[in-house]
Length: 468
Image 1: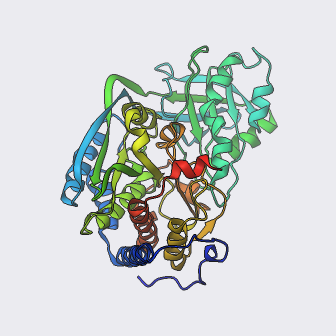
Image 2: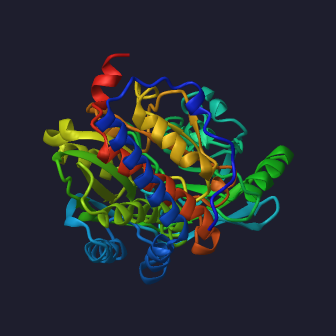
């Protein structure tokens, strides 16, 4: 694939560099050349796409703590070993296994019709014969929160607030309480079940799943997401009068199960105890095959690491590639940070890929790093890919490494075009055909350049951040 033709990096116009000695300048020039070579190799190499194809074809969906995810961990371990990684191993993530069952919903009255729904991850089941009840519809989540205690007794609460389509996906974080907290808030007001408009930007008749978080002080009630057209239909019906709905969900839970996090390393040639960590999550939801969420991220970080593993000698610092288990159910990040708390001080930089495979358009450097040779060289290397530097400091890079970040690990972040990401996120449409191999290659090229330059750097990113 040919490199994108774009102007010289914007970053070079405002990054002032300290004067370097002759040896340091020579090393910097060599590092820049190696990073550019990795970038160009990634654009022509299809290993990452084949990794993703195998993951979604040979394994398919990878629901956390299930047999499918265990097969994925076996496969990932063998694949990383074959790719040249060292210290390849898996770490258990104890958790219950939530298994989706039947999910059905229909309007009983005033106009009987089928509704497209999917249970939220972690939802409890309805009674065996389902729930038949009148709905109370809220067009905004804030209206549910404002409802009086007891006002929903015996009713099914329905929230139909829409999630806007935005480039960086920020609306998802803003809308997340609708799914995460909504069932418990409805239960506080007496509801016996909860439905919400899917956190998605499509207008197709598919529902978007995702985890919910029951609060310990209220009754757990069955919870599901509606497709966007069906949420619209309930709005129209409710505007005309009383509407009754039948809901049947039959999920089950297997206690004392476990998920797996798989990792491999490229050992540093000079400073092996200093670690640059790049990661994605191995698990997925069960409706599709987890291609964009997060098979693409797995492919991106694994392929970037494979390119660096082939370098002789290896970069100065150790590169660690981590494929986290159970991200979707919120277990992997906290479990990894707890297990690795003692070495958090040795992780000099971390980054996570968990936003599909669309093109990266910008990156955010660690706090205090914007005026360093590392950032200038990275910006120069990836500008031909259509990526510019955002001068704002990176404050987060992904859910799985957020607990490490809270332990003081600096992060760097890439931002991808997310305009259509939430059209298929957490749906049955999350399949391999949604991934453009050329766009995936652009991601791998950027990640390979970043990971190499970070592992080859001597920068203390913590010190830079503390100097701010």
